[in-house]
Image (tube, rainbow, N blue to C red; front, side):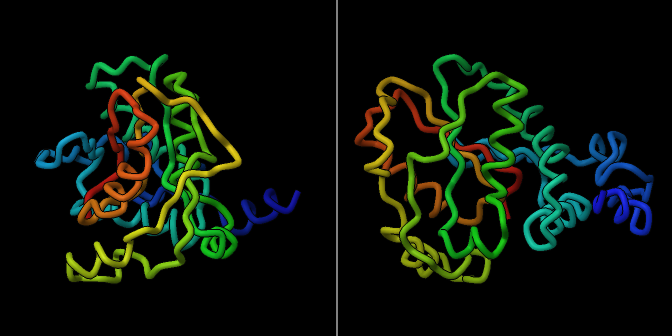
Length: 208
């Protein structure tokens, strides 16, 4: 009922064209260009962060807590990953975890919401509890120096001993919203290597 009242006084509008009922309408979503420059091995980048609408949508999603944007934004990622010949049955989506303090502040893990939508659409298993973020570090986007970003994220993740899982010979697909230098994804991959997966990939909305 509360949501209905909010919709009455503050109707949902597309961030691109102001059309009502959707935060990103299909027409505006189709206009977001794909990321073309692919320089990092095993990193799949869905959209072009320089496109103002995508940048605005990601900001609304993360910092204005518009959870409903997980659906249209995940469509960009689904469209991109479909171009790769993954064995979905042998794959696992693993959202990059937030530190508990940041999770309490935001109320949700944006990477987890994206992974859930992708998994639902492509029938890929989602594993939420394999990694733990132990370090409440400064957000990578606030650090301009590449070396400091690497140091900032160093030893920030561990395997969760309470949720042992067999990922041997599985394809792990790390899911996150924005990749900057790739330091966060690399740290996650290093922690996951002892599980002996077949391959570790990363899927992100954009590279900032």
